[in-house]
Length: 180
View: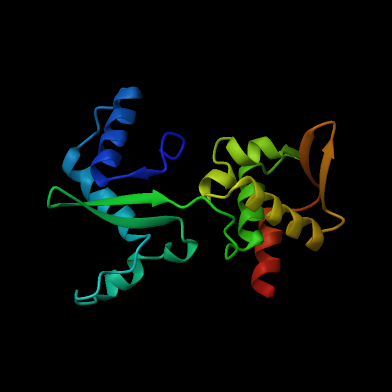
């Protein structure tokens, strides 16, 4: 959905999922089930509202809140409350570069050269997944190169921006991250 828009309501997301199911000629769309799934999805990005009694399940439902990917905005139009959600595209200073590198190595496990264009806009691109700007992605790449000087090279030759990775796996990055 992010490729189409960065702000949406629950109803718009529900319509988007229904349209995608029709595009793939899937008869499995159930409006009530998908609506409930969207509620769970949204709760993963926000802390529970104050005033509600905390339950153990609620405490673990906001596991993605620290990524700061989606913001909630309440608008009142003609005395009607409408909740909008916006995907926050920025540099993500709090996002560890190791997580971005892990996602790159997981998505392209056998590649030694990856274009920055693919990292920004390709299928499951880290910039799309983590709502990173071009500048934010380049800052993460700079940190990767500084840490893995002999295994990662960033190159800008003839207008082609490339990331070259040699002898490094997603598992290696996780091991390094959790050892430190």
